[in-house]
Image (cartoon, rainbow, N blue to C red):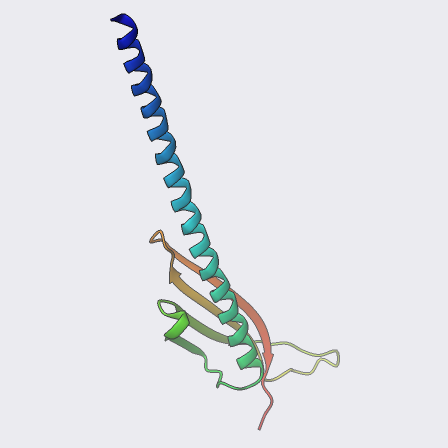
Amino acid sequence: MRTRGFILFEVMLAVAIFTIGVIVLGECVERCIEAELDKQSDVRVRRLLENRMAEIQANAIPLNDSITEDLKGMFAGMTLKTTREPLKRKNEDNQDLPNLFLVRTEVLWTRTDGEKDSRALEFYVYQRQR
């Protein structure tokens, strides 16, 4: 009789250990999926920032002092803020360099875990007079 009770106890202990292992494995899989989704969002944000920089440098879009856009399509749920600031710089002959701007583009979005995130890119632009 005693051995049967001991075997039952061993089986219950083994099932409990197995259950804990399955739960931990499920948590690991969930975190891996969240990390992959965050990585994909980061890739999209970097592509967006690079595209916007190229558009501004090529004068494909007008450069205003400040623009805020709620994006759609593959960038849905993201907000793009673009600001420009005139720079007061002089060349080697101590002459003013007009039409030189510091442009900052920033993307704001909500990650899969609900926290707000942002990435920014700063670059210089020289706008030619038309």
